[in-house]
Length: 137
Image 1 (cartoon, rainbow, N blue to C red):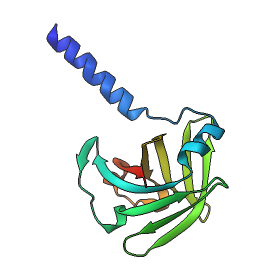
Image 2 (spheres, one colour):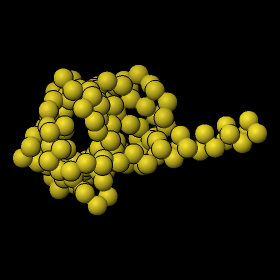
Image 3 (cartoon, rainbow, N blue to C red):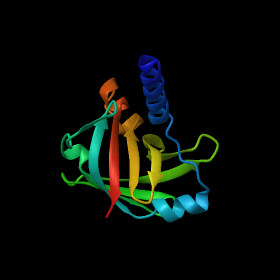
Image 4 (cartoon, rainbow, N blue to C red):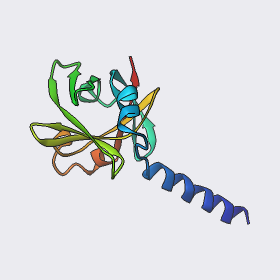
């Protein structure tokens, strides 16, 4: 019986972790997301790890006009637009009309960002499982 309950609990945790979405109105999202964010820590396949390198140590400014700017500690700057997909319940960040990252979840005290497309190196499956946890400044 313990094995069945343990298995059910593990399945629930995995399902919950993989199904993170942004469930709120655009107005509420603007109130939460539009501020400066800084990297707190990263997780790889759900396991907490240290900051990997300078590329994952950045400050992200989200603006209500649907734009963002990202400044890394190496001096690299990215700017683009962000869009809330209300049907699929996530936020996409675009740079030069290409997907850069996806915000998987957000609340007042934390945002979870996953690099996609231009934000991830080609053929790097590890980055697909890398979540960057940000906290407001």
